[in-house]
Image 1 (tube, rainbow, N blue to C red):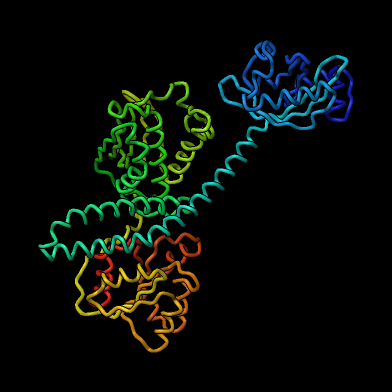
Image 2 (spheres, rainbow, N blue to C red):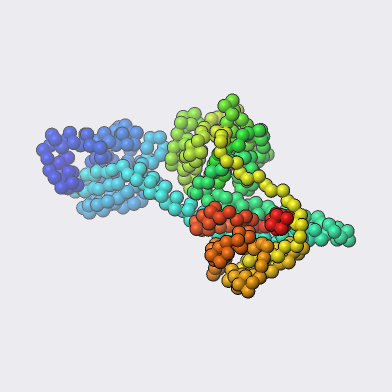
Amino acid sequence: MVSHVFAVSWGFVTHEPDDAAFFAMSLDLMCVAGFDGYWKRLNGAWTRTLGWTTDELMGRPLVEFAHPEDRERILAARAGLVEGTPLKAMVNRYLHKDGTYRWLSWRSVSDPVRRVVYAVARDVTAEKRAERQLMLADRLASLGTLAAGVAHEINNPLTYVTTNLELMLEEIEARPELSSWRELAIEAREGALRIGTIVRGLKTFARAEDERRAVIEIVPVIELAIRMTDNEIRHRARLVREFGATPRVLADDARLGQVVINLLVNAAQAIPDDQAGAHEIRVSTSTDADGHAVIEIADTGPGIPAALLERIFDPFFTTKPIGVGTGLGLSICHGLVESMGGTISAANGARGAVFRVVLPAAAGAPMRAPAIAHAPATRRASVLIVDDEPAVAGALARVLRDHDVTVATSAEDALARIATGARYDVIVSDVMMPGMSGEELHAELARRDPEIAGRVVFITGGAFTPAARAFLDRVPNERLDKPIDPVALRAVIARRVA
């Protein structure tokens, strides 16, 4: 009987005793199943792969071990085998005793006389997981590009909204008869600033695949992550901050932010969504005995079963329902924290789960440049603003109304003005523009006169192409992110003409 399986499936025939030994020792999953839907014979690979005993597997219809989504396809394939149609290839999922599923790739033939099916399967779970991880990575990369593009499109109109609101507030402050409008303007400005914070988060975490380490404070990164997950948290729990002193760390703020976001979302999803008043998520920072920075995120959910604590960071392991979690979030967190020289651990606290991230203090690393104090301009400056959005350029021109401002709505227009002999103390240029970009404008100015190229200050709503990001990292020119802070813009001009 066994030799018949091998003759059909693999194209060779051996003697019966050798076949029996090969059947028993094979790393592939070999079986004989009856037309009644029960296994009749299984080799040891089945118990090694699925964790069930032979008696447990043979005591139930085999379709009961299949993933519910695969059962209809399996029954259809069995019907074909009963009619004598060989099954050349099929991939489906079978239940492991620990509750997870293994992917098996099948080949089967039937014997209508004996009313049995001879089959051999291979465990392709690792291949399926790798394929899934590649697909997820591709989706995340696409989402990152999309997020950066959306951030750029939002930041352009947000620039003139916030800038005009700042100018309105300045006017209101200077005219007492307009004081009744002050509260409305402040409220509108706060709303615009909140949008700006969300967009800044999109820009930051969209580039998480490009590691850029710097010496950073961890609390601002945590605060940004909290704002990004506020909608997920506030319907489930109170958020409590306990920020103790911590050293600076050498880390990538986007990657650290991604870790904190994942941990916050996990904490929120562990709590029922109808008992926000009874639960809390506590975010704390501290310094441990070794001088390392510590981040702890604790929730008041059900905690992590003790038997699962050792597996919590395994790839594709999840306790969430199908469709809610991929099983990659905590694994990704583990990899990101380790790449920054830190550790991440999980435990059960007094009421729920506690995740602890420990990062070594920065030592001997270059510090981020300190903010330069704002200073009033000592004279009127000649400023050229280059932006393809007239509303943005107009708003910036109004901010700089104490200077001599010229507006160009394209890089080509700016070059034409400079070619006529016009001289500017400062050239404020957008980076991403149709036609000639800010990078190309800078290159052309550098070709004509490097001194003029040094006067360019770049503004950007999100340099979301690799070339644009590399350019901004490479050139020494100052840069302002949209939405533009009017005070910061005036300070840049002041430094140039001081």
